[in-house]
Image 1 (cartoon, one colour):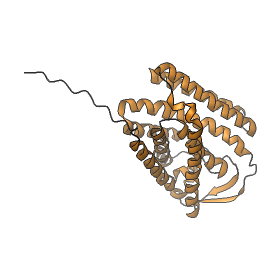
Image 2 (spheres, rainbow, N blue to C red; image 1 turned 180 degrees about the vertical axis):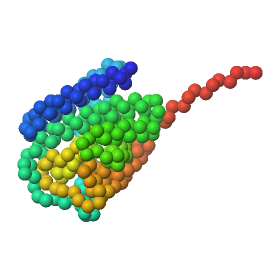
Image 3 (tube, rainbow, N blue to C red; image 1 turned 45 degrees about the horizontal axis):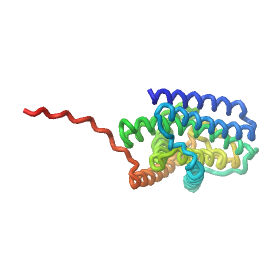
Image 4 (cartoon, one colour; image 1 turned 135 degrees about the vertical axis):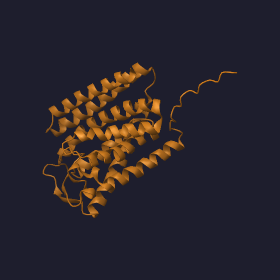
Length: 275
């Protein structure tokens, strides 16, 4: 029941946040304010519902770790994507044509991305993964939640099965493992934002088959789709897959060192009756 209540609450606030951001689309500074406000409201609603249904302090959204988690995640997300797009470019899959026609769009994209990634992290890591992990343990919960995360991206305009699989393995794995290692939502929110913002607002690439929203740079992809990612964008590149697996492995190693992996629950053994 707790899972259902939290799921409905996060879905509802995510829908309303999306509607609010859509209303100010095309107005960069207003989009920034509305998007950031929507992200804050969504986090407050999540914290309130979890506190009410689980009767505990909601440590995964603690204000004490917010700044450090968001900043570390943001820097890591931008850095990892920059390396990936650089490798794609060297291999002929990405080319910068020039600056975007209206670079101020990057301001509005910050608000749009803040609302979108916060909603996704609250839903997939805060609700789905946490509740699965209690029942199945870390490894199965990681696998299932990552596959669901990738599968949802099949709904996007230029979606492909390969792209969705890459998102599941690289994106779902990387973001969920970040949550496991930190045991808070700020690191994966920052990481998700940094990756998506670099992809769209800085490098002008397609994001998960959702189309291109031109920001600072105007670019094009070309050549082998396994390298460039094709219409789905760089997230369907084999280089994204490799980078995601590497980062996921590092986070899981850190989680293991910190004792934050939850074993699978074993069924109770039947008691032996004395003969």
